[in-house]
Image 1 (cartoon, rainbow, N blue to C red):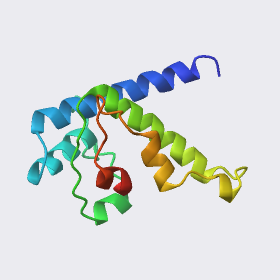
Image 2: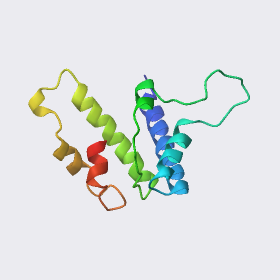
Image 3: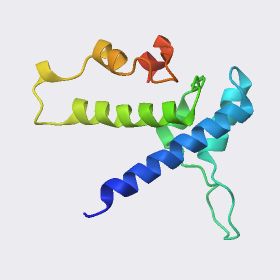
Length: 129
């Protein structure tokens, strides 16, 4: 579809900016991570009544507790990692790819070196992703 790539780019840019904004306003660590997760998953309320709380949380994710910290120094770092994660997902799940050509964890980490304003993202963060 014409313009589809631009729509995806705008969506990813908005996501990265919002993630950086929310994670920056709450800081990092401990209980703040749950506040960041809630702010990201609960969109602003509209005037329309709804049965749902507004969360986009899938059922499987609600069953497990995840302690995530957001180490981004800029919205650009979040954008680049978002794009890199999409590429990793495509690489891992494309049926046309041979297994020996699929990206390894080491390659994923190497591909994301220096994306955090010249610094590396924490290895445990990339590994858990």
